[in-house]
Image 1 (cartoon, rainbow, N blue to C red):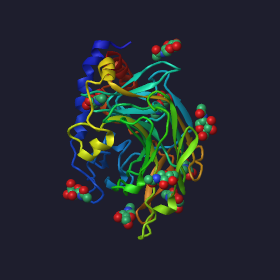
Image 2: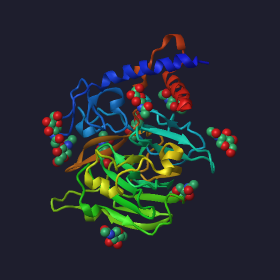
Image 3: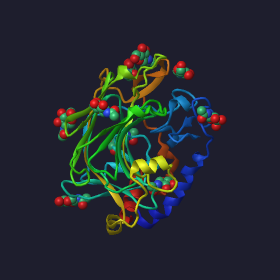
Image 4: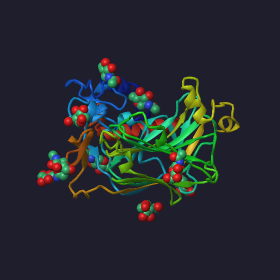
Length: 369
Ligand SMILES: *[C@@H]1O[C@H](CO)[C@@H](O)[C@H](O)[C@H]1NC(C)=O
Ligand SMILES: *[C@@H]1O[C@H](CO)[C@@H](O)[C@H](O)[C@H]1NC(C)=O
Ligand SMILES: *[C@@H]1O[C@H](CO)[C@@H](O)[C@H](O)[C@H]1NC(C)=O
Ligand SMILES: *[C@@H]1O[C@H](CO)[C@@H](O)[C@H](O)[C@H]1NC(C)=O
Ligand SMILES: *[C@@H]1O[C@H](CO)[C@@H](O)[C@H](O)[C@H]1NC(C)=O
Ligand SMILES: *[C@@H]1O[C@H](CO)[C@@H](O)[C@H](O)[C@H]1NC(C)=O
Ligand SMILES: *[C@@H]1O[C@H](CO)[C@@H](O)[C@H](O)[C@H]1NC(C)=O
Ligand SMILES: *[C@@H]1O[C@H](CO)[C@@H](O)[C@H](O)[C@H]1NC(C)=O
Ligand SMILES: *[C@@H]1O[C@H](CO)[C@@H](O)[C@H](O)[C@H]1NC(C)=O
């Protein structure tokens, strides 16, 4: 066994090693990354290693193949009897989607261990909210999430798909109303047409009751469902503009769930209003638990790639434009692992594989939370 104190002492060391690659210039499609730091992260900064994993934008990176290939979709029903499939800090992910189903991009999680286990995403005044992302991507298919939302004004619960070029499909739940869910979609991060959003009303309290919120994403239509009932359908053909460009999500996406503070002073007034006002940090629920939260009981993923992958396929890669503004997505059998965690490979005295070391470090850290 590894010594616990030693592991804790290592945490800041590992952090400082990782942050070296964070020194990056900004990037976008017109100003992509240089060869020396080829990967444009989700947040628009150039770097290597972890910058090349989930969220790395191929169109803003040095070359179309600078980002690591994206782990291919796998049918699964994810439940949370414990936290063993959730890596508690995405910075330590090395691209092995068999090792973890989810990574925590920011914030804090808990396992409630009732009714077979529930994953709680926490919001505190200090943590700025919590977001998890799937380690695998989905390129069309059905995703159903059985969740209970927050019920507090200014607190938003979200269940979305997000591609690396920012195609996005949403279910969002502003906490002031617990009988509604809002559906929306975005194409390549473009400011959406306000008509893209729609509200589903008349749900039984989404804080007290589990509902199955689903997204059925096909190449030619997008359907949002609640408890198996279709509440909205969008035909892809209706998204074609006068310029002939189809502004419809078409690129492999990660599944993300989050709870985030919209009702805070730094948010635009419109966002605060939409979310139901400023957050009351004296709310009795917050005072009692020490956090706001959303609960996830299960997430059911059914892949429907336009062409089913053969057994040797590991990943998706971007290729040249198929039509204007729409990149081609191809299967590949290249590895998705870049060993971002090799940065942490201090080798020598420990004689353990880095991924194991990292898992142990965070196993210990999460006990202390
Ligand atoms: C994840 O790890 C990085 C690097 O050590 C650190 O900067 C960050 O604060 C950590 N995130 C969380 C939520 O603990
Ligand atoms: C892209 O990045 C460059 C360099 O940082 C910046 O000058 C430019 O304004 C950015 N373009 C857009 C559309 O954001
Ligand atoms: C969850 O509860 C079950 C019994 O209900 C128990 O066997 C299991 O060890 C618990 N898991 C955790 C992570 O506490
Ligand atoms: C990826 O993770 C799985 C499950 O933990 C493990 O069996 C496999 O060896 C790992 N692959 C690599 C290349 O590290
Ligand atoms: C919302 O979607 C439903 C079903 O597709 C449709 O009937 C309704 O007009 C839409 N409402 C708005 C405001 O777009
Ligand atoms: C998962 O979704 C698929 C497709 O909708 C469905 O056939 C299956 O029964 C679901 N599994 C569970 C456990 O809900
Ligand atoms: C794809 O098309 C867009 C718009 O026509 C263009 O700006 C971009 O450079 C193209 N990308 C590639 C890789 O051909
Ligand atoms: C990528 O897929 C397209 C069709 O979707 C195909 O025409 C093209 O040859 C493929 N490219 C590679 C490199 O496999
Ligand atoms: C995977 O690799 C084999 C050769 O090693 C190749 O024949 C096959 O076409 C590849 N599959 C894909 C999807 O690239």
